[in-house]
Length: 124
Image (tube, rainbow, N blue to C red; front, side, top):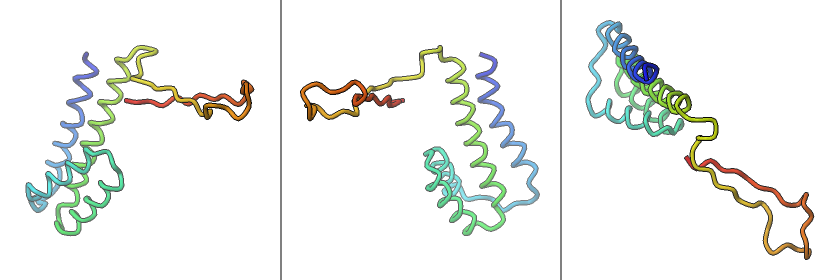
């Protein structure tokens, strides 16, 4: 329980300290900040990189604030994942679906055991 609380508070505290330490940076408009946060929370690296590049280009002087926002959200996501894995049991890793790599019906009457393969795909 203490780890989960610490994991959620530490990134926020770190971001606050980083933002407070930046000297006289230009204020980032709320719309740009919301756009950067949404891109960072999406988990899509290419989307995040594109939005951050445009935000830095259009808001000179706020580069450190943009980097701090992305770093804080990344740290929150990592902490949340670690907390989820720490609380999970040995076999509690989320839903898994098994799919056969073998086409049915087989080309031969009885498929050889070596031709059967299963793929495990994590669903969550």
